[in-house]
Image 1: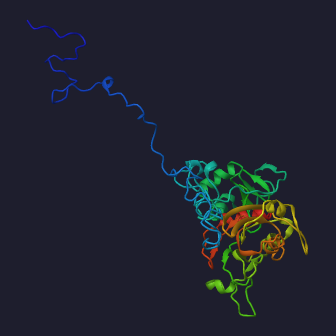
Image 2 (image 1 turned 90 degrees about the vertical axis):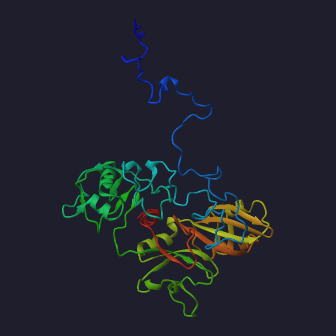
Image 3 (image 1 turned 90 degrees about the horizontal axis):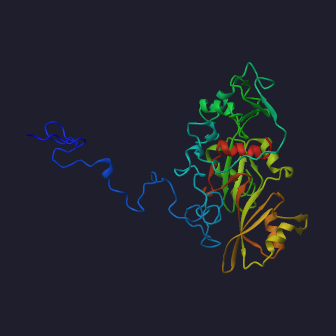
Length: 390
């Protein structure tokens, strides 16, 4: 007499175990899984884009430059941090690389909180937030004085200017991130006249006049800061190539022996404001002098030094590098007086050996090749306009 299978044995009527595989081996139950080995617990997917090293931002060369006189291009040493040089500890693309959080990546689709104006542009993404003078803001409006029934919808103007897609621009308007003539607009039906309206997104001014041109020129040593020179010396117009028909102004001047950043534009109002002392636009220089330098020189230059045309001072003073016999210093000042940097260092007994302007307001020369001219990105132009309250 055949014995009935025990309750819970797992066998069917013909005596086979349904849990076994075709080879007769018992299949592993969920409770029979091997325990995880110590220290090998799964903690999520591997991170992408993380820097290999744990130094300053994980990038190469966090230390000082190789020598005070061996910097490339515009004269910035690798460790000087002059607008994107290696060793500055800042991401090459302004922090929008693979390792950045999704919400922080510029220009991608999604919530407007993570979308920056002109986020897909190459230049200007690392300029930070726009700092405009604090003034009382009018409450958000729908169609009050800024609405022009004969104008164009605000989101269409923004999209045409390259801010973002129209859908993202609509989100920006709803979120109260857009101002028209100083008034926050939240209604998607508002129409404006692009030729007269001043539109800001996150404080960034949109330049809607397509005839305006803005360039960055990395001036080499020996070039005169004029468009024409009666003595036949090399001047700015010699580097304009196909832009010779454009009427451009150079913003500020650099003496013949000084290298670095010059801004060129046909925007007369911007030129006047950037050169007017009341706006106090800062300029950054790398200065190579004979060393060693006595302690306390930086504090002395911040406090002010008497020159023949009055007291001059720097806004900041930083020792970048030093080698036997040479010192490399970074100074920031907003004074526009003639040859003021050279005269300051002459006054303290350290005549300048090499002088390079690496930044003008928010614009950096970066790794731009000497003698080259590049078009400023729309983010950069917006920061320039905001720096002088335009």
